[in-house]
Image 1 (tube, rainbow, N blue to C red):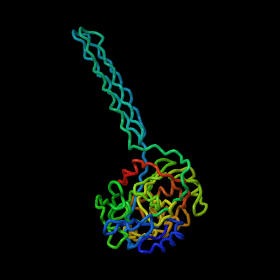
Image 2 (cartoon, one colour):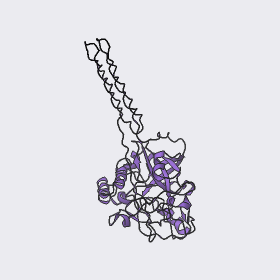
Image 3 (tube, rainbow, N blue to C red):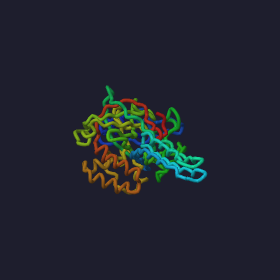
Length: 374
């Protein structure tokens, strides 16, 4: 975790040596008046004031829709007419409607129309009208990238957690090499769109906060997506990493970290500062504000838990306590509540789990949300 801003490089270095164990401390790093980033590789170069404003993020669960194939249209039999002219054949059955595809599945197959009805007698046999074929094959849901292969080799690292509500560093033009920065949000969690110059809410008078839909979310029982702060060579706005959890804790043995063994996350870097070079600070609602706090301004007078480690640390690992704090703080903020639920369930309250990591191509679901090029 570590403390950025306002302090000298020496004091930041000292802080980084002692403060990284529970949660993260960074906030979004603004550029100065000339558009330059006053922070390099997570170290403060000088000059940023931090004061409360806030931001949030949410998580979206994956909803799978069952694929269903339409039924086969019934065949109508032509009516019999013994008069001079044959009666008109019966109308062929209409084909069933094809089912809608699942999140990544192929849609249902269109149905075959009914057979042509035939008149048996009469001078002129009437032909029944063929049943209409089923609708076009159902369109699949949102595209889901295939899960990554297990990491072979890679580098060792660990994950912490934070949510300080500050504008992220990758929301500034000067910190993004390609394309536009990511958007920030206002006090109510509404996007500021292309207003990339809005002042960081963690600075005095700032109005730009972290958006609430940047919480982690589960893709499957073994794969999740999310966003992180990083430093050193790992801090490149928009870059993605595969994190493969090893089943142990960086800050000591804990059941949550052990339960993650074999699970994987793909995360995108959107922030920097105050973390170790092998550390990925996961953006998790209720994860602790760290050195900067805009959440008290944005969310109101709620107990935000421990400054470093948030709800989990304040609750001494008790699940019911964490859940109650989530429900109390995020009752009217469903995106943030979803992120807290993810931490309780998929992440199983893991405290600073160890992992192996490597750079990876960004999934489309991650870049679509952040707007950052991978």
